[in-house]
Length: 362
Image (cartoon, rainbow, N blue to C red; front, side, top):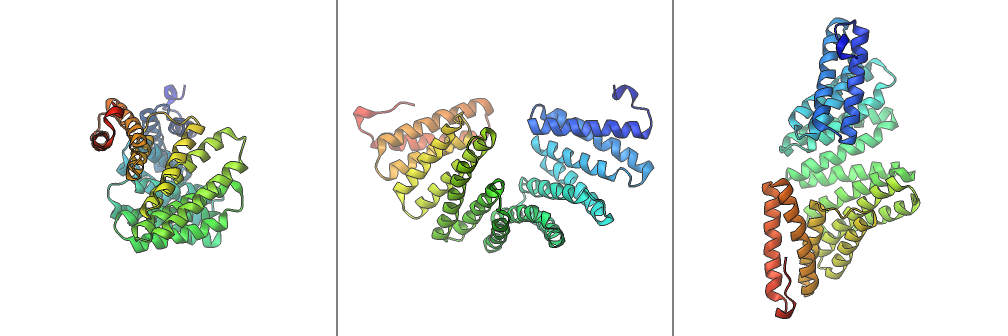
């Protein structure tokens, strides 16, 4: 109905643009049609740009929202550079709106800063990403001094900054940023719904400690994250949707803990943590083939091999090979092919150690 009356007045076009923005957001959130989400959100951006020419800054809030959704849609189809441009424009508009005193602009700016940090992390240029996220972190920190509601997004920007710094080889700075984020999130974790925030911060802190060769500190940080995950699962028992996400988080943190134990030569502890990580996925029915599950089975196989449990190692690597073959057949990318090759090499190494009467086929 809207498209057949596209020549009507600005109020009608604004309504049309808002409808497109909402529709694009729903498509992006559900993943129903990512490419249609790009088309709808781009059209909304163009509508509000046109309206803005004739109405000065009246439609700035609408344009900022449309740009925010456009960025999300672009990132979901792998167009991260364009997504970054869109979200940076959204942030700049919303900064102006906050400065002008618009009441709802603060929460909207938080959302844009969060998306900016997330989008920048997807770039294949960690130095540029670090520069962009550093600016977002400074903005969020400045805002949080006057408005405590910005502390959460400030910590998110700091974690993204830490991630970018770590991938740029700036390990000391990455560790400092992660520490600051954890301090903020420890203060924020006054309610159960914010527990995953602290867990996420501790996981990044653990990665930074590992990169600095501080393996005991790395294990301590991720062990804290696992403890928080377990407590959170107990607190939300009965909430099916949240419970699924919580078990996923625990599975990932247990995987990280397994790797930290292995770094310290605690082989049996590493095996137990990896086995529980896979069990957590089973608990919520997340055993469908994917790259993370394949990696868990691959690494579990290596852990078994290192303690001489060759039959168990053969079983685990067989599952990794099966999953990775399925991923290659579906995707065909070089990445999955290389991962499959690594698993096959491990399987051959195990086969040479296993008893001739217990040979495995995969």
